[in-house]
Length: 411
Image (cartoon, rainbow, N blue to C red; front, top):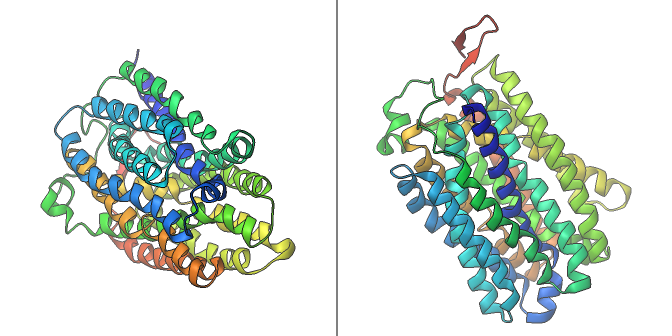
């Protein structure tokens, strides 16, 4: 098999595994009212399930990153995929809230091994100027997998019980993990052309790398908003807007699936296109799309009637537009030999400040006021994300792009 074929196979398998990863995460959100009816816990306690998942995820990520920069990444990815797939299937014997919490913790550790390493693995198979599109394809799993989780959970949960939908992600994950044995370990830095500076190639330099930190902090605020909305939107539509739970999951799932496909792919293409004109393209596109999404988000959350779903559609489209470009900005901000560790630091930061915090905070505010009050924090986070990324434009590293004349040039 040719190197290009290996690269495409790796992208296909890793993206499929990422789909299953996010289906598993969002199934709980889709069936959350059913789980609450069985275990009788508060909104804040159910928000803490997601927080616990990400706490374990964050603790595991830096350890995995350090290992991945020293040892074979493929073996670690496969091991992690097997762990979280088996833990997902353990939902069959989960009959207490504490057992559900433990299950979430184990899945968090397993998923950390996969999500931490996959970006550096793919970066060594595709050039810098293509990574907006490549990571759009890989990260399309976030919104579309999440949407499928809503749809699968919304369809299967009311009919067969809330445990049944978890098998959709668990069993196939084991098969995909084994197929990764067909993909060879790529040479580190094989596709990189940017100069290796101290900021880009050492852990000490990473602490003073403004391109990395502005992209990471901007992503953290975006993750805060999207994480909170993903957890609580089906409940919001059911409890506050009075849609039947199955209908609420279908509507939100369809909107997210469409936006997750079209906006994510379009954002990756547009980011790579703009990169030919300016090195700050990934930062500019991400910052502008989130700024434009703020008015639509306010309309979606605080206004009823016909305007609500169109506004939700537009707001989510603009937020998801930056998925590929922003992840490409993080990967391009560091060199190959510390990339897995840098991605681990990125994951730790975005979840610590983002979706490990927002579900519990929104649930806390909901218990004391309303879900609309809780969602206000997501709007503030989007504004902060946009401001940070606008500031980060001046730190974007030069990227080698094709000139169209058989050569390359730094932008």
